[in-house]
Each structure stands twice: as structure tokens, then as C-alpha cells.
Image 1 (spheres, rainbow, N blue to C red):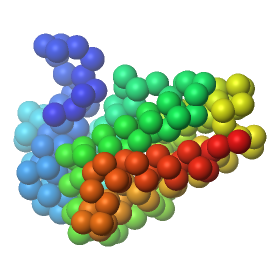
Image 2 (image 1 turned 180 degrees about the vertical axis):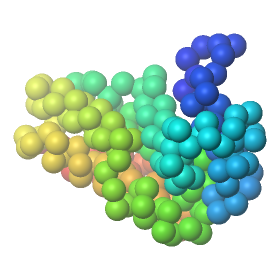
Image 3 (image 1 turned 135 degrees about the vertical axis):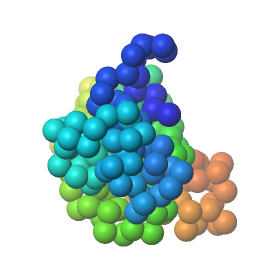
Amino acid sequence: MSSSNATAGAPRSTDDAILDAAADLIVHLGVRRTQLAEIARRAGVSRPTVYRRWPDVQAVIGALLTREILATLEGTSLEVHDRETFVDRVVEVAVRLRDHPVLGALLHSGDSDLLLRYVVERLGASQRGLLEALRTGIEQGQAVGSIRAGEPTELAAMVLLITQSTVQSHRMVASLLPEAAWRRELARALNGYLAP
């Protein structure tokens, strides 16, 4: 399920086996019905093996989200000098995140506490990774004048907030913003914010 395995046919690590099992359960049974014992069973490991790595199901889900979110950046460099290319790539990553089966299951789980904990209330490893990629891209654009002046980390944080809220609210406005319009308007918002 995950794109994080380095090479096809390579043996999975125990961590990946556990996270892959959690991903499968979340997608097929839902977040609320994902239990640590079932994660262990599907991964082919014992419960103590899981507990040695993560203390509970929420920690497993946090690690899974970090792995999957950072994997969405693979193959899409945000280190470009042109603002419009940078924005196009941010939108592409947003689409990947929006359409990701595990992230979608979390967003649509109805478990607002879980969503708040992992997406809204904390700045976790996955969001820090996204922020770093955004900051680097913004610095590249600033160096040639295609992105406005400003503290790159602050601009990156705002780009993350704009994009994250757009991804989270996609279903709510899907009838008003069909796919092409969603992409176009997100790009327009980001270009407008970053333009010199």
C-alpha cells in the first residue's frame, strides 16, 4: 500500500510490516476499529513486538501518518526558482495528500479527536518535513525574486496552513469546486500570497 518501500521485492522491515498492516486496517475497517492486536496479527508479529516500537494504536497511527505524508514528497522537488512551478508542485502534493487512502480514511473517519490530535493541534514530524521542503523552495524563489521577501519559515508555515485547510475541507466544497477549479483556485491563492 505504501510508496515508502525502497525497492520492489525488497524485504519489508518489521516497522514497515506493522505500519502497512495498520494502513490496511484503517482503509478497510476504519480508524475506530483498528486495534493493536489486529495490527500485530496482520503484520505477522507479536503484540510485544509492536509495543516495543509504539506504546499504543495512536502512536502507530502517528508513525504511519509521518511515513505516508513524507512519502508524498518523494519525486516532487519543491526546490525550484520559479514561483509558479513551486506552486504547481505544492498543489500536486496537496492532491496526493487529499487522495491518499490512509489520510482520506482519517479525514473522513468522523473521529474529530483523532483528526485534531494529528492534523490540527500538533506540529508533528510529517508537518515539520513539509515545512522544511516548503521553506527551502521559498528560499530558492526569493533568491531570484520570484517569491516576495519575508521570513521563509513564516511564509512556509502560512503556505502549509492554506494548503492543509484546503485539503481538509475539500469534501465540504466539492460540489462548488470541481477538481479543475479546486486546483486552479488553490494555485491562485498561493501565487497571490507569494507574489512579490
